[in-house]
Length: 255
Image 1: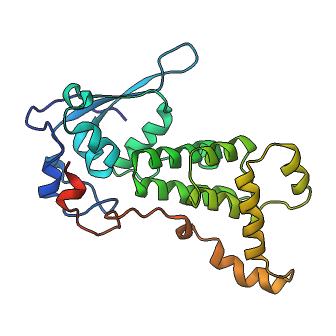
Image 2 (image 1 turned 30 degrees about the vertical axis):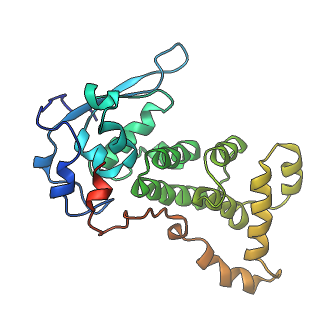
Image 3 (image 1 turned 120 degrees about the vertical axis):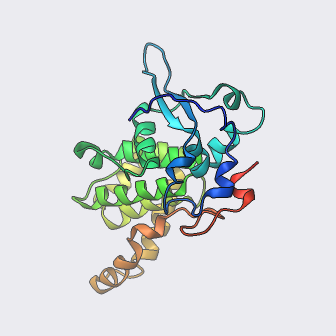
């Protein structure tokens, strides 16, 4: 989704959002008249092993939803002066899905992408980087469905990536562990943990989660606990000031 790179000299900061937007973080976008300035976002590394794509995105939307971009596009940063943002460490397809989400398309995934655990995990990690809880929670919804319909596991590489890019207590860690607790095959799991290099934090959290979910080995306990422990809302990200329906304050939208 690429927009014409029409620039407007009136919009050189993100401050109009503070005065005119009525909702924040996911309820709806700013009104169309507010979308005055377009920035170029270069995503990926332009070398022999990776591709780089360029996207035109409205500056106001980036600032409205993301503290990461709002900080970058205000003040004396080079990005604020040039209207060019470079994201060499990120994947073009991840940013394209994020941009579509910004413009109200939801998590616009192709059929094969809905079951691509690595891609869905990358969406969550990117949302964490740019600090957009609504986008992270959309990724959580898709990940949970991918895990249970039909049941599938995260690859070892995905688990390593998730634990390397998140902190203790992170909801993405909890989702992965619960996926193994509730849906993963337990047969041979101990051997896998020992032989395949699973992160120690994952193994520790798995056993803690298993004891919590199955305090005693009975079918009755499984049926009682499973509906509570396996809903997407349990893994939602909520940042201060970003709950749906809460109006933004000046501090939330301006530097």
